[in-house]
Image 1 (cartoon, rainbow, N blue to C red):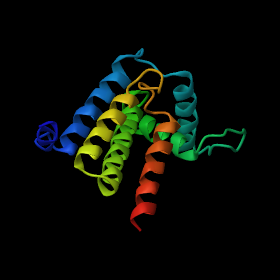
Image 2: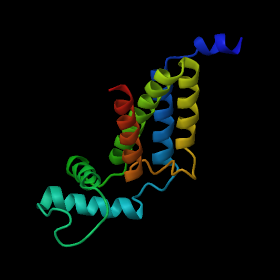
Image 3: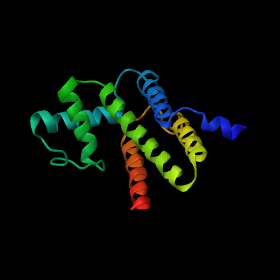
Length: 156
């Protein structure tokens, strides 16, 4: 009975879209409408890189990838100081990672397991202890890209 009801459940794309919307609301509206310390630093470095042609690492050292500086620099160049664009982009990348998780579990198990795994994983991404509101941080991109890399390693 339960398995039959799961097969009638909504499309995984619909579920991922709903979770992405919830994640974006958490990322933007559960924290003050300002940059965190790290976001402010990345925005400053990114702005200097894009607008003033001062590449990162030329006068200092940081352990972050240039991608995060570039994202915040492009955000500043397109929209000025804002928190929503990097967090929206992080939510989209995170949702793509959830989609690839669905594809991995679907390949290894079945539809029910895949549907259950993206539900649990998507909810866990929103927890405070897993940094639910910090979707613009580098860990979001790292985890999503690792999930994608695992999928391509599994499939090819």
